[in-house]
Amino acid sequence: MVFASYTFIFLFLPIAFVGYYLAARVGAIYAVAWLTLSSLAFYAVWNPAFVLLLLCSIAFNFAIGRALLARASAEDSRTRNWLLTLGIAGNLLPLVYFKYLGALLSLAQHASLVSRGFDFKVILPLGISFFTFTQMGYLVDCHEGEGKDIDLIRYSAFVTFFPHLIAGPILHIREIGPQLLNSETSRFRIRDVSVGISFFIIGLSKKVLLADPLAEVVKIGFAHPGDFRMCTSWLYALAYSLQLYFDFSGYSDMAIGLAAMFGIRFPINFDSPYKSTSMIDYWQRFHATLTRYLTLLLYNPIALRIQRRRMAAGLNGPKRNKQSLSAFGSLVVIPIFFTMTLAGIWHGAGLQFLLFGLMHAVYLTVNHAWRTFGPKLDRAKLSQWVATGIIGSKVLLTYVAAVAAMVMFRASSAGDAMRMMGGMAGLHGLDAIPVPSSVMHLLQHLGPVYAYLTQSHHFLAVPTDDSIPAPASLALRFFIVWALPNSQQIMAKFSPTLKPVRGNSPYWLSWQPTTRWALALGLLLAVSLMSFQQTKVFLYFQF
Amino acid sequence: MESTQILEKLTAIIRDALDDQDLKLTLETSAANVPAWDSLAHINIVVSTEMAFGIKFKTAELEQLRNVGEFVSLINQKLNVKQG
Image (cartoon, rainbow over all chains, first blue to last red; front, side, top):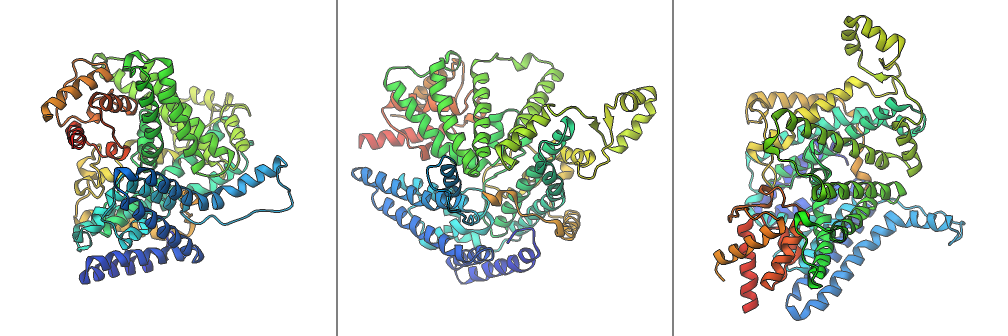
């Protein structure tokens, strides 16, 4: 069941919602149990058989977690390490089977390591990467003594809670556990519910009105990656970057809104990533809970271990401006490449995902190298204009680099991605810059310049082909991405997220519980509901 | 050890790691307010602190720190456990 469907909005959600607050009247624990039951039903609609897999996974992880917590003393640290290893292996096994075994086998068949006689095909259980990661994080927390007071009912609700079950955010037990333990959470509060509904509508409209209409055209572009010349290739790549943006942003908003309707706060997962001024910044804003997860479980432990060893060996901790190359290599390059390679293949088994991870590893390394070895600007001495120009070019550079990696992410194979990038680099020839017809009308007033740009040199043209993304529709989306506040900034006064929101929203775009806002959002909801026929599955459902 | 002593020792460590001898730290300072304090600098600060105080942090503990004040109380807590 997808959030942007009539079944979800008019059947599932009302039942889950009313049942939750009715159950809470009997007792908070019943409300939590209801949450688990309705979430399982939500999952079962897609494929009932895999509910069993989900339940086994929950039982296994809860049991390992209990065993870890029961051995809290220092003498048991060896046993704890063994238990954690067993737990992680138990989680990775189904993930490898469902997600990577097919690709590994076909690789082995290509290398003639196994016979070519059979074809291995399994369906990927929805959200397996997400619920596996959430639970491995729980085990690591138990290993360090966290999550003692969480019982099986609350643990099941933590894992299955439908707003995050299938595509994140990836939650920590210490941010959700206390909320589930607090009986105030399931007390009906009109404020949380109206904030939640408003947040949900904003997300729904992003998904239905801004992301989905681009899906068809993006599909055409990436089905024929080698067929386009430079500007058209860029149009397709930009259209995909915007589709992905509004899809994931819309999903994340809906998740926060739905959680708020049940009195639960989620962390921010998507924080205007295309406004980032560096790649390091980008990863703090794009899928922030995955970045946080990978930093906590891979990057930090590796970097800490390396640094502890270096310092113990007498290689003194490098200071910011006296960083040596070897320190940079071992403290930055190794952990980043390790983490980002895994982040890449977390998204899928293809070579293109590995290359996507590697591209980002290179970006992040360059970014860190620039910070460490590059020139230091004294910002106070710059004029306002220069400073703004520098920020603008940083944002643009970060975005373009991200788009290049996204081509890898979207293409059906690494070869296709290369062909698309070749087109973007101008290897398949140049074509006219596409401009909206309205802009073209304005340009006509320029007389000879207009004739030069269009008729004699064909620098500019209005695209006539329907299968090419319309420049005006992309421009509208870029305006929303770069010029408007994001959803959490619009809702900031009523803070429906876990951490404080950065940045703010102008007065006229700050949500208030008023009739005006209710009417505006009601209208947005009506328009979104009427546009459902072209609704697509969320892009992040495939991971 | 008193919190003020810990803060003093920690300030010296952080100034060294960030190579900024004029840096002023209070209990409310957070990494977000100090531009040079990024993930890499953080690793240096953490390990230097471990060495200086003879303690060891868990990654989950470090994740939850919001500001210098919480870092100081974590160090304090570790030192108390160490002394038993």
